[in-house]
Amino acid sequence: MTRSARILLVDDEVSIQRAVAPLLRSRGYEVDVAGTGNDALRTLAGRPPDLIVLDLGLPDLEGTEVCRRIREGSTTPIIVLSARGAEADKVSALDLGADDYVTKPFSPEELLARIRVALRRVFSEEEGEVGRVQYGDLTIDYDRRRILRGDAEIRLTPKEFDLLSLLARSPDRVLTHHAILKAVWGPNAVNRPEHLWVLMGQLRKKIERNPARPRYLVSEPWVGYRFVADAE
Image (cartoon, rainbow, N blue to C red; front, side, top):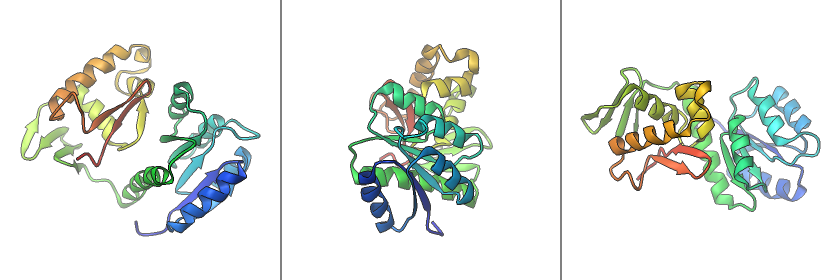
């Protein structure tokens, strides 16, 4: 990263503010703190952050509503940090545009790792994304719609490439089943998850060395899938 990243922490719990803000500053980040949804939206407009850490249980607006409003005019990464651990809450937040979801109580190192991943995307986009990207032993050539393992090409169908490309363009971000179905098949397919399950199975057989234990295309149970950029 060529500059210090600015993070907006949105949480009304003083204990969280006192724990998370100093933690982030100790890692070299600039931190703004907002205790309400409206404060967060005002800060976003006047002092745009590189990343937002957002609680769902705010005193004035639901965090999901804040997320929706942010996504109306901004692509800033949003990491939800919430005590709500139900899958329905996760799916709702992710479908409304959140990039990731960390449940309280949380590990500080896990939160920092999720932040680093999201900020890598921000700074790589600022530097300009190339048409050919390598992840581990896989190379994705977006311009030619080709996948290579080493020098050997892996033949994918158009839909398989669309699915892989969708996930890989947002590495380490959870995409919900609903979002993937809508992007790959269109809005009429959002209630047909079997399409996705079959296609994912086919894709894993082609790009994973052990499809039963995938390194790249990882399931988030009952929520969606994540492309792991740093697979080992």
